[in-house]
Length: 48
Length: 255
Image (cartoon, rainbow over all chains, first blue to last red; front, side, top):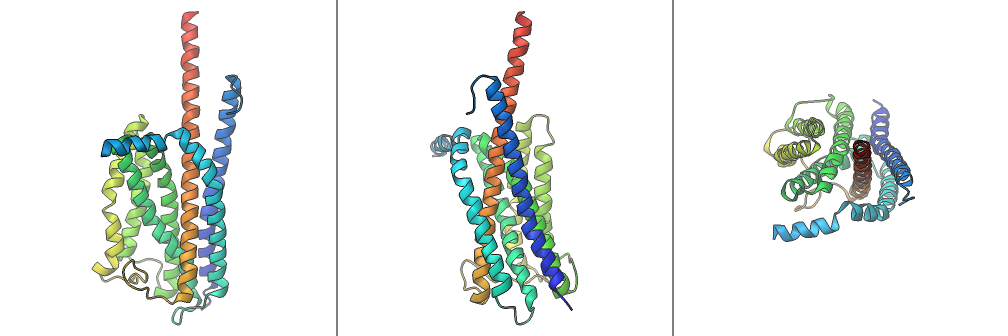
């Protein structure tokens, strides 16, 4: 019996999940930073 | 003693200080974790030998075991953050606990999925309700319960308190997971690596496993710190918008 598909899927899942979580937090941080910057600029403080 | 450690905690873990420190540490955590993980997985897949009994199927160990360790270690860190939140009412501990939950749930889901993928060819079944598998599944449900509970209240503070209590009660599951293979007759094998005895696993298989565990642990820490950092910024945005709305309504009343 060929076991390669099981190993392949396990590695895809194990590498994919941390990658997805990292990408998600990167976008979340960027968006929060952009919003903070725009609020600070409107308050006349400029970038922190 | 608790009051003194509480003061130290507040001094070193205030949100501003955390943003500054985490900004320095995060790139190192991500790069070290990513490189170690990639290197150890390549080592495990292409250079480590197969098992005499399982053949190449043993290579799933390099992803399954680190995720299994991190599922429990993640829950322990969630419980620690909850303890700090309940005892010292530290806002950063609330945010950290809220951010550890989803990451821990994802890692536990990967542990269950990779375990299933390992179980089908070796045991002949995707799933059995044995003590180890069931206790890890309960851990997954505890994570989901925590995620749901902290979002179930209009007042976030009440949500954090309820979540913290659930997290602390759920700690009882961690020794059950650890000793389930010793206390009950399970299909899952007993631990090959322990803190006290010598490992029952060959060194050629053990080293890539240890490096992969360190790599995934650094990635777990990096993701949690990055999420907590984002949560601190989002909280700051909310309070700034709230302050602006309050001052705008005050000006309207004055006019």
